[in-house]
Image (cartoon, rainbow, N blue to C red):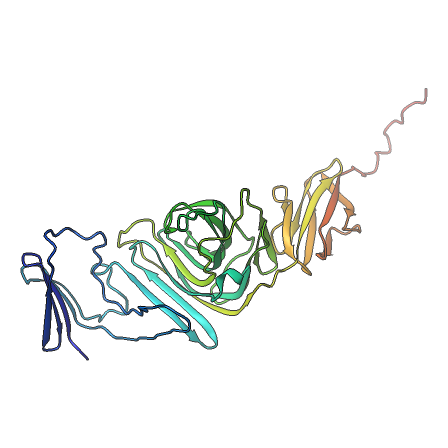
Length: 388
């Protein structure tokens, strides 16, 4: 265990560095002293390469304890012995990260105290060669009572809509599929966003959607995002969604396909705490699933609704759903009061209100509803109409 110290005297413009009993100092010759643009007070581990090349790698692990911070007069204004099991939000505005292989899966954890945004992720080598990225994802923990964007995700900067000469990441378009969201209960969803500046810290949401299923902790979900050069495909289990953007398509300035956890708190208030823990397994690249659309409609002069057992179809309102190839969809026709179901037309056949359909191509089904006819017996004393 080593005792480290870093101090700065603004009057003499001198930095003081100590390691145990050894002290060194450095004095700035710059004539003025201004407040820093990023006044972060932090403790950290870092690996940086002076001359990046391939292959270079590094690793570091460290423990920090008994942190003490002093003001310019030498008075203690903050101390932490980390006796609490979590970071104290009254003392720190930062994050807790975990990225490790555990039980043959990638474990990614992130806890935010509301400082802004950050990631706990891994990035695929040779990023420009990745056009599809999939994995099995399991949420182990999800805590989000304050509307923080908290996601376990797969994604990439897939293309640029502005083209050369590039202004950093301006115009790069990001797409992802995720578990999580901004609500207290996690959802499964997808989004597409465009970078508005060179550092990709300001984005505009182009499109988004959710999958019609419930997300539960401890369950695995098959996620995938793919780009074929003109259209995005997003997958969660048997459900799929597709989005075709408008505009130009150029090679992105930054690709960076990744999987991991992400948070974007809306303010720096320390009360906006959130946490997420997820595992990633069976990661695949450049496997494009076949996706087909099931369209349902209603015919006849009666009324009713068509639903699917696994969700996605509720017609009425939602009469189309994309599915991964080979999915078997169970449809049910439910007549309204005063109507009756009389049969299916199109790719669904039969008279039964429930039918199953294999998604091996785009398919359409029509449920026929007719008004219910009163077949009660005529009273014996009722008069028959006279023939004219």
